[in-house]
Length: 158
Image 1 (tube, rainbow, N blue to C red):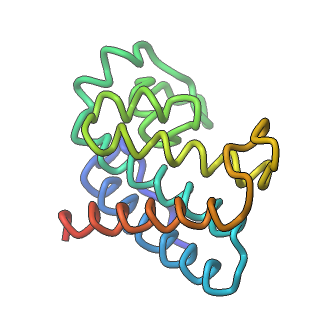
Image 2 (spheres, rainbow, N blue to C red):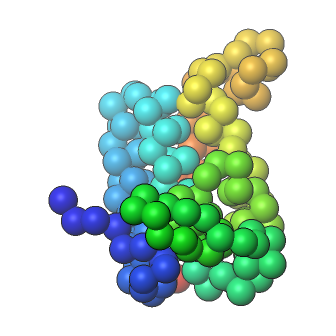
């Protein structure tokens, strides 16, 4: 298995790999949908979105550097800039702010991705308390919407 290039070594190789990861995760999500595995598809769709945002974040590193300051020690004791760690890991807790820096459709669709992520863990909720989706079909519609957007965005990088 090939190791993911780290952004602190080669930003463009990292970007290319993360965009490819987004494509593959989206393809798997579609297969899960075809099999009726809606929550599994939700998970893969969310992973595809995170990979896409991480790849695009490379182009916004300078702006992100002002928000994610300082250094972080990684495995092996190496110190790297926090912004590079955020771009590499793209933790769910940073996804919203990173997407706001990127702006436009990325920021808007991140809201949908986070709702899908919530559905993945909680499933449908008839009362709408732990999930905004009252049934799987409503979630499926948003999953398809986000997958279509992922494919549209990826087509601009081909």
